Length: 101
Image 1 (tube, rainbow, N blue to C red):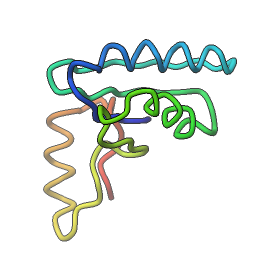
Image 2 (image 1 turned 30 degrees about the vertical axis):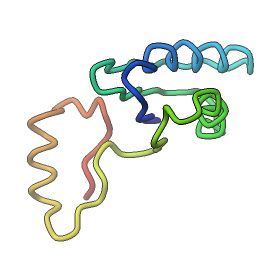
Image 3 (image 1 turned 60 degrees about the horizontal axis):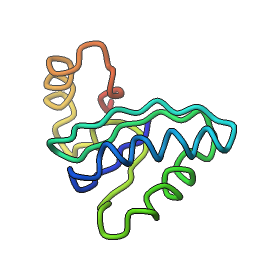
């Protein structure tokens, strides 16, 4: 999946732009936003999903701070067991990715 960190005031607009851009490219996108935090999470059915998302965020200069792809939890140095235990409690169905092993 893709995660976009943006201004909270732009989150809903970014979701709409992402879906429109994907449709224009003949792709599908599923996206949700947390308008309170400005985080947009998306799944795009394209090998070039990051490029597609970067094309969208270029339309929001200064509003987007980060675009990431992959696991919801970064690899933790020295504490993978703790991270996996926390992740299993917060997201037992692994909706937002797997904990690092």
